[in-house]
Length: 394
Image (tube, rainbow, N blue to C red; front, side, top):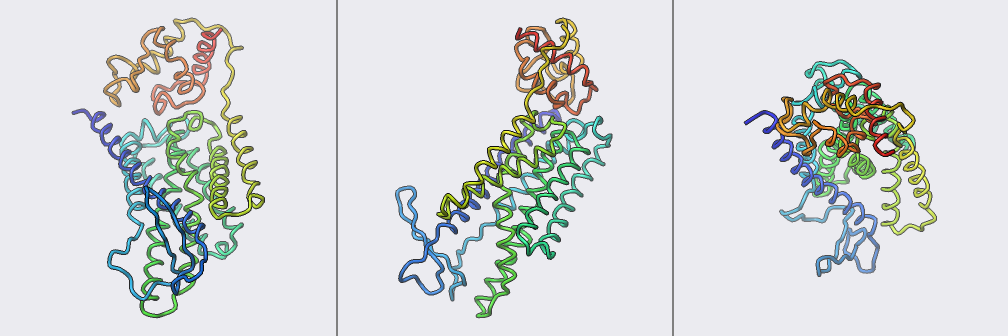
C-alpha cells in the first residue's frame, strides 16, 4: 500500500467524520440560538421559567421551557451539548495533519511566498493556533470585552491580522485553511474552556441554593454569541481550498475581511428575523451583504488574456508537460499521487483543450497548481498558457 493511497483514505475518513460532527455542532448552535430568540412569556408558567416555545416537527408537537435558574432537582439524563464541538475540532485537526502536515511541501509551503522546511511550517501552524486563542481570550477578559462594538472591531482585526500573516507565510491553500482553523480553534475552546465550565459552576451554585456569580453567565453568553457570528465565515474558509479564485488571490486576506462581513451580516439578519424584530431594525444588513459580495466578485474577476500574443500548440503543450503531467498522466511519476487527480490527464493537446477551463482556473488565474509550485512555474509561463487558452475561444 503506497503512502499516497493511505493518506487519501485517511483524508476521506477524517473529512467525513469532520462533516458529520460539524453539522451536529452547527445545527445545535443554530437551533438553540433560534430557540432562545423565539421564547415567549405566557400565563401560568412554572416557577423559575423565563419563557416557553411551542414547536412542531416530524408530526409531533414540542413544548420547551427555559429556566433562568436551575430547578430544585435535575434529572440524571440532563443533556450537555459539548461533544459535537469537541469532536469537530479534533477531527478538523486530524484532517489538518493528514492533508497539510503530512504533505507540507505540496499543500502548506510555497517557496515563492516563504521558504520553509516542513517542520518549521508545522511549528508555525501549531503555535499560531495556540497563540490566537490566548490573545483572543485576553482581549475578551480585558476592559475591551465590556464594550461590545469595540470588542467586535478588535476580534475582527485579530482575525484579519492572522489572515495577513498566514498569507505571507503559507501557500494560498494553507493560508485560508489556517484562517478557518484559527477561528475554529477559538470557537471550540470557547465551548471547552469557558461555556461548559461556567455552566457547570452556575448549576452547582444553584443546586446548593447559592446565588451564582453573574460574571460566569455573562462570559458564557459572550463567547456563545461570538461562536454564532463566526460560524458562517469559518464554514467558507474550510471549503476555500476547492476555489482557487480565493486561495490564489494575491490579497486573499482582504477577501477574508469581506467573508467576515458578509457572513456576520447574514447571521445577524437571521438572528433578528428569528427574534421577531421589526424588519426596519435590521434591513441594513442586506445592502452591506450585497456590497460585500459585489466587491468580492470584482476582486476575483478573471484577467483577460485575449490581447496577448499568439502561442503555438506545441509551446502550450510543453508548458503543461513540464509543470502538470507529473501528476496529470495515465501513469503519474509524482510520489504524491497514485492516479491523475479527478481523472484529468494532460499529456496531449486534445486533453489540454478538453480541460482548458480547469487549467485556466488552477494554474493561470491562480497558483494553486502545480502543488506547492514544486516545478517552479513562473508568472510569465502562466500568462503564456492563459494566452493559449484564450485563443481557443476565438
